[in-house]
Length: 169
Image (cartoon, rainbow, N blue to C red; front, side, top):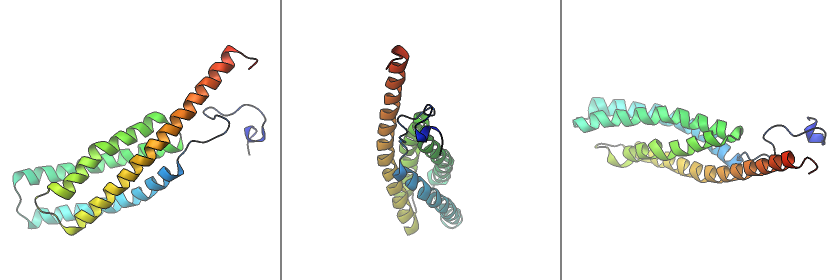
């Protein structure tokens, strides 16, 4: 236990009254989404390879499907990293990037996998709906986490502003 927890000294930078605004619900969603995304990456990649070998698709499907998968996979790595860092370290820019990456490109790519492919397998429907459900849950929890983080940082700002202007405060 540090000195600040026992009432001695000053609080560490970023702490208002020693209260954390980290969202446990968001962190739990991110944790499970990491494993879900790894499974989706492996299985959807295998399904796409199978469909490329077996099904004869038009040029639109041959180009757009692998492109959407590559965009989803690359964005998912950064989205999860920004979510973890933004939530655990209480950094507003990172959690905002996580929120934006969840809305675009993740949701459009997953919606393409579910509804717009020429050929789709039942696995893709189940996995896509599961991924969209996780992302919507993360969007809702990250919205409340951002609100709590903004409230905390605003409080910290006013506390620091008041202590600088009036040292007797």
